[in-house]
Image (cartoon, rainbow, N blue to C red):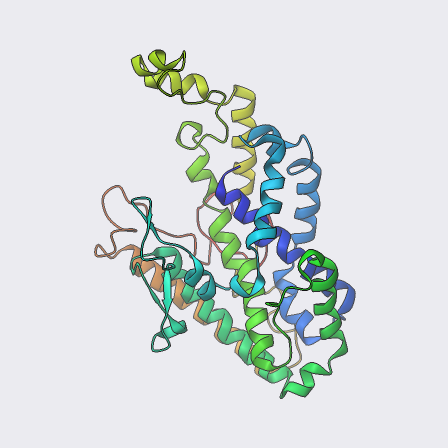
Length: 361
C-alpha cells in the first residue's frame, strides 16, 4: 500500500470517525457544535463502512493488490499506535514535526517548519516553495478564523464550555471509547476554554476537508499509469550474485515489465483509484453549505460564515496566482504541474483539485 493510502486511511477516515459517531450519539441536532460540524461529517460513516466491506477487509482489494499483502492494515495500525496524536495533526504542528529529507539526509534534524512566534501561524517554513504547506496554511487560517468566531459567539467564557454536558460527553466518548488504546495519553487537549475548543475543532475540520483532499484527489494522476507507480511488484529486484542478476543487467526494462502486477491486479487497482479520485456531482466544497441562510437563526453567524466563504475564495485566487508565478519552481515551469490539490473548488470527475467539506470518498 502506498504511503498516501496509509496516510489517507489513517489520518482522515479512521481517526476522525470516532468523533463523528460520538457527535451523533451525544450532541443534539440543535447543539451549536453539531451545527458547526455537520457539513464536515457528510457521507464519512457510509464511506468507511463500505471500505470495511470491500477495500480493507481480509482478502479485499488492499490486501490482494499491494505489496505488503495481508499485513497492510497491520502496518497502518502500527503507525497509529506509534505515531498518531491529535495534538500534532493540525497543519502548523504537523509541519513542525515533519522531517526534511534531501539527498536521503535529514537536514539538521528539523521539521518542514520551525517555530517562530514572529511569523504568521507561529512558524517559518524551512523550504519556502512548498506548495502543500503554503497553500494549506491559507485554508488553515480561513478555517481557524471562522471557528474562533463561531466558538466565541457560542461560549463566552471557560465555564460555559466546562459545564456543557453534551459537549464534554461527546469528547469523552470519542477519546475513551473511539480511541480507547490511547485514552490515557497525556497529550489529549482538555476542552476547558474557548481557545482550546477552537484549536481542536479547527484540527477536526482541517482533517475532514483540506488534509483529506491533499492526500486523496491526486492519487489517479500519480498512480493511474501502473508503470509509474506500481502498487505491487511480483519479482524482487535481484542483487549481484542472484541467479536472475545477469538477466536484469542485460535488459532492465524487460525485467521491470515482467515484475509489474498482473492484468487483473492492474485493472482492479486502476478502477479503485479512479473511483477514489473522483468528485461526485453533489459534492459540497469548503465554504459551501446547502442551507447557507437557514442552518442557524443567528444572523451574525450567517454573516461570519459568508466571510469565511469569501476568505476561501480569496485563497483560491492566491493559489491560482502562485501557480502562474515562474519564480515558484515547484509549481510553475516546463515539466512542472501546477499544485491545485488545495484549490477549493472543482467540477465533478477526476480533476486533481477541489476541497470537499468532508471525507466523502
